[in-house]
Length: 182
Image 1 (spheres, rainbow, N blue to C red):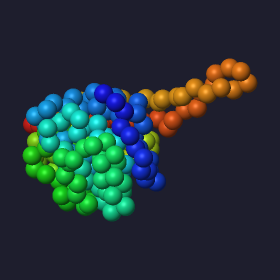
Image 2: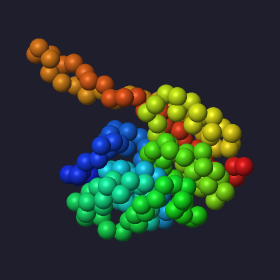
Image 3: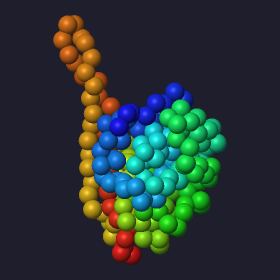
Image 4: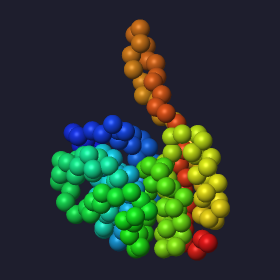
């Protein structure tokens, strides 16, 4: 599948392509899935999910970012995504099959909602170490944690006729399920 076109940017920036690739693998989207993203920002993950899942709902608390998501969806010829300008857990549907947390605000309440509604697959990406530790504890407290993955991507560039690397921030990925959690 082609990479999403993201002509419109948001201050937070998109989830990097390599991180999206791993996230999508962990999300394991099926055509029958209802995918829900919290914190759509540029819409990069939403776009990728819309190409795989049968139904997509994206939440974003900032009106300017929901507009960025809307514009990037249009640039990728994706129309059937429900956009909700709200701060989660408000606005979360009760019938999600897959939940992706791209932001870390209110994640405890969002995880509580996932447990209450029995979301089978939950992935949360975190870039701050302290939040990663707290979020890992929150997943464990809810008996949701299946794995934690930490990875860092570096891109090569020319330096004095040779190749050197610039590193992106490390990402901590929490993978779990609220199905049967309590």
